[in-house]
Length: 476
Image (cartoon, rainbow, N blue to C red):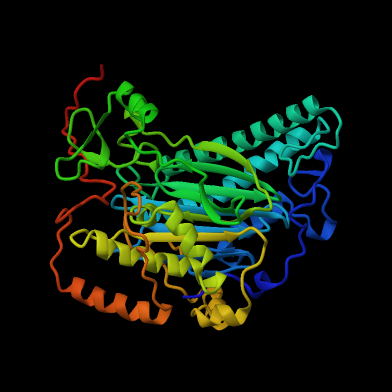
């Protein structure tokens, strides 16, 4: 299970240090970079045709210079989670990260389509913004803005303009992504969809867009030098007051099933279907007229020296582990390159411990280390990410899915956060030992006859598909 990454992605970083600032006129899409390192949009369009061979872009289990990623299948069928880390995204100090959690009959295809297409749409809008702003002599997407003691009001106005430009780029790219899914000739998204939690790190700036219930958190040190968890995104569940109000205003219904009162769902006005466990998503066009939207929540955060790493994960992790537990697991991992894998292993054990009658959800994790360093290649090999495996996957030997994308491992879907009740819930084992335990447990579970809604179905994104009759009730 190597990462789909070329050997060139393992070279040392030549980027700017975390604390160095840039003047507003030199920021954005690498306008002040050396010519040899500057990328034009046409370069990216050319690379589009060979996404899997783009250097510094990983989307299967493995590591890069600054991150490690891992996904594992649950007990409900094909893995519907997808993930990506794309270093040198706009220039050599920009990294794009994302986790996408699909649901419905074609959720795995939707998640992979969004994983591949959304970063490119964001890139396209940023490039358009740059061209538009070049004529006015300003930069669309600035990096680190620091005051030199000059006009503070002017600096604030510039920063607001930068945030506005980034917000517009995220909103437009998400809208274009959903539009493409609606008109896709070979992908039925009527009752299938995907979440998305995406982060673009440029220097000390984080720009975040989020729909659904995948989540991003920040591991940081407090004044006592202790690791703390800072939640970066909000789980957009149907029971959030503003989300529920919008859905009800659009004639959709929000309620939980009797056997899972803790999981609010979205239902059609004329049928007890499909029961979507989130208020925003890509796809799910059967509910788009009834309040489910694909407009992301956008936010910006400036990093400090106290901030150590970012974790993005699907709800299969957050259903069983708290933010604080996740930060503890990642910060105490024996090697950084194993952090994502160990976190998924811990989540898997917690599923078996806390919800023995439930089918485990898919899990996908991205760990981005903010000092720009992961581990040496030897550390990577200890965790099963050998350079030979990485190279073989990069060469295109991975299995192909129905949509022609490289298929990935799987574990499945939807609920909400719970607080930890135990002081030490992880009971971590060495990776090799944990694998043996998981295999034994998997063999036991395989002997059991699970039905789709047997036991506690707290992790289903969709309860059932809509049953549309030929005559639909007239709109109010």
